[in-house]
Length: 103
Image (cartoon, rainbow, N blue to C red; front, side, top):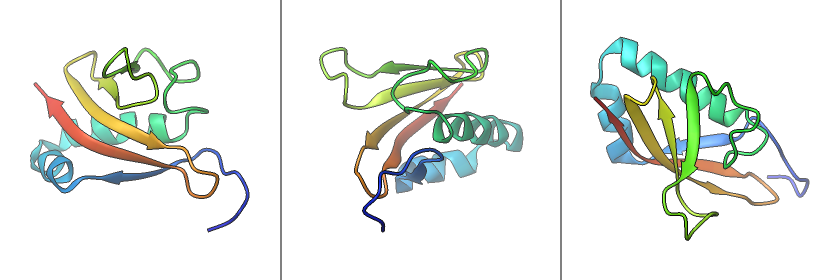
């Protein structure tokens, strides 16, 4: 860990249930998820979609009353989503993916 502010690419981690669900999906869907998470990890700020490729992903808060809380990342034209939080620390900021869904 360093004492300096770090920026993109952000570190990302998956909860056990989210990782198990992701791994059980078809390869094509897992590739879409990897592309969406890569887009998120390389964004300037993981809670804003101003520097994302918004043709493939979009972001919104899970609850409008908690703008710094969990967020939803939609991918595959809204057919899938994942819920994540971003821990903004000076050293080692991290995205934690809590849930994932695809239909």
